[in-house]
Length: 489
Image 1 (cartoon, rainbow, N blue to C red):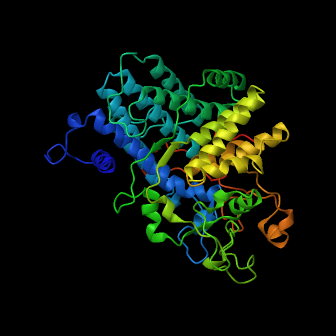
Image 2: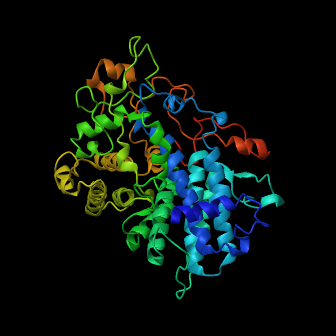
Image 3: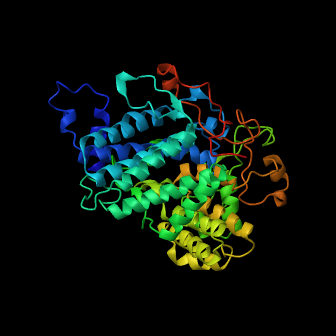
């Protein structure tokens, strides 16, 4: 029901419906209809195109040997004309942000306005994390300003966080959420907890970019002391195992099921950690029933494969069956707990609190994958909380990378860029292939074929070619080696 409702309202944004009695007029589209449409637009980006390309960038999967749909993603052959960000740009602006703007113009209910602002904050965070600069201060003005300027990513992060603080400060204790809300079911306390989780995620990025680090560190400590975060998951959980109601990524790849295989770094880390979660969404290769990942960007390189190419049977595939009705996650409980663990360890020197949050993050992810009974054994063995502070931080970051697999690939990519964990191996794929003992399991590998990365990984996304065509204020061409503002090295 929610999928159909959201689709109707979302598509109506771009239609001339004034004289068509089969479509509601702008005045008839109430916040209760428009808010879920906005959330659906964010989900459609997060759980589909962003989910797909970020999964390649963070080396969860690669292009399966006997198919070619995503060769460019695997080999980082990405530029503005690749149109990688065209659909997300359209959906996030013409869909999500415009709907959220109109919701805010149609209600004075402060609880509804707060939930609307939380989603606006999440949406702009996604835009910045992909392209850094994006329209903000002049955006969403329609024909009165069809060429909005691009604001710097830092200013946008600061702007939406300020808006979020103001929306929360304006909350009337007597107001309750009245809009249809399949995400957090009209719970204002849950929306406050979600807002605090977004703050924590974004504050850490400011700190690691050394932007007002002392101020943001104090803000993090305040969040930890209040301990007012959401419970459960923040997810768009409206899909089912029925044709027409599938998760959008599953629906998109269903006819392209031979295009994804497991990537070498993830498989090797799972095996090194003796982690039973390897069986979730990763299939043993058919030739000998073992788990083998493909070296990133290697399938077309005949030199790497000694003038031959691997076959599908040589590597582990992705089990799409687990994705039929998979929710789209805006914030997982496991990511939240790993962020809390990191902050407790770094800023409060509270080893006990960090350990508790770390173990809660691992346990939450095991439970999601139907392996709750295995979490205790993992946490007492290779996943145990021990070693130096550096070791523990690395463990938090690596387990976050694992826990975001098949859940939120966009945040996995962003968190890898922020923390540099998994780190990029100093060894080439060819060196590792020749001598596997020199490889640290989980380290990312520079793709064997690396068309645009200049010896590195993808660090951001080129601007939408739609923006280039229609907005004269679109900045100079953005390369995938350009960093977003918080990715400072």
